[in-house]
Length: 348
Image (cartoon, rainbow, N blue to C red; front, side, top):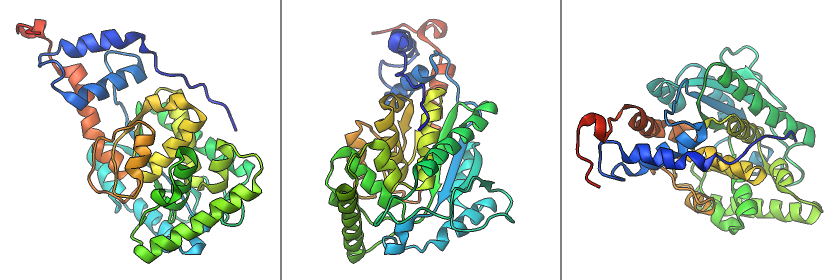
């Protein structure tokens, strides 16, 4: 795997950031989470005048071999059908990108469909879906490295356009399954507590999903002699998920603000942080969904989501919904007056 130059944010400017926040014409601490977000973004960009210029949204699509085991209520064809729907502007992600001014890039890294005649999808296909990790590694080392590089390259494209804030989404039927296994392996939380309904499984469906994933983990642990974070990621991950990990690491290296969406993207963030712990400094966790285990995963990372709206769509929709809150934090730093300029007595 390629290496990244990711360092913790430089905390030497914390006193200056806090002084500016405390001198805004408001009671000390009265803007709560907005002040927390503002501090973090100032640290990410190492400035007292942060910017969210040219927001970009990357949506990676890929299919999963494990889908063949009936772990999702949705059939695999929904992946390509939704990808085409996105090109027509008809998805939830399209609506929210339009609303909040994000440039949307739709990227095929592993969908089991030929999009060559479809405009609007960036072709980075590695294969027509991953292998079935119940029996073998989802991807080879070469495929893993390619997925990481694809994520990096897409971030570079965004940076070239002036991007300072990035959100990432996914489209891939059955991708809650690898997410649940990553959560289990990286956090130590029992697998049963990491598995939920996904797109809508009933109780017997969830039980079947647990049985399949439990068997997959057992097979992996019995047959892989030397495991590591990279091995965990490669064995179970989807191409769209590993591309998201690469994008997160590249964005952290380049000091972008990274908006982390729901359960699947939180699992990708968890994987990225296993490889480079400092990457978490650049992440804002935007939404805690209803998928079983999501809050547990956030708690394991010491993260607190901005919203809990009951979303379970994926696509990065939670991150996009939270963007106005992040924008308000930046506007607070740049547009609010201070006590001296407003000629208001500072009373604390």
